[in-house]
Length: 193
Image 1 (cartoon, rainbow, N blue to C red):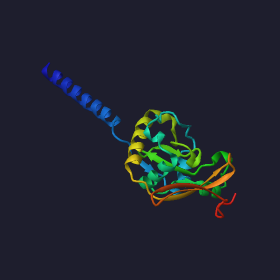
Image 2 (image 1 turned 30 degrees about the vertical axis):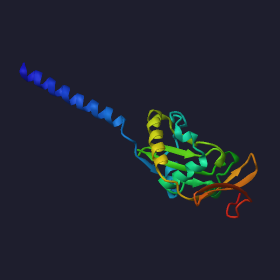
Image 3 (image 1 turned 120 degrees about the vertical axis):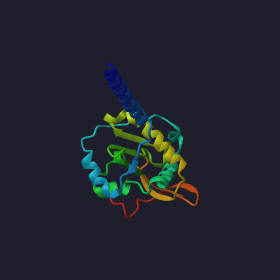
Image 4 (image 1 turned 90 degrees about the vertical axis):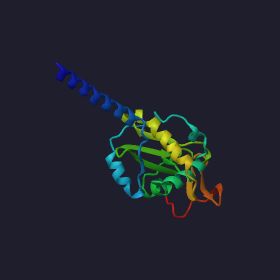
């Protein structure tokens, strides 16, 4: 009888440890790794069947920051974007609806895809966040972690281009010498439609 009680007690302890480990894991910060430009094709083929959603990315302080500034902090935290308008035009995938300034693609915890992009170039606050719909429960923690990383990182200089179909205008968007700028320009000669 005592042996059975000991076994039950140890089984209870093992279950308790397993449950507490699972609970603890839910509060760990996710690993966020940027997809490099050279890895775009692999990312696309790996996540070709993913159903993308913006749900779960709760509104927070990052959504009140101008996109032009977020871009500089992303540059500091992760380096160059995964894709800019130049790469989209180069790939032959440009459409007016794909008029972006930049996209950062990420792999979360080595298996969850996520993309962060601007919607209206340097003219709005915040960015657009999309992830795999089956991981929607993870997205609030992912957004909190990304927000912390981005806001705690010093901004770095960058130069991008953006085409606004609504305005039918090209812009050079930059952060240099501590100043943010968006200036109207002619279509850059290296970007051919």
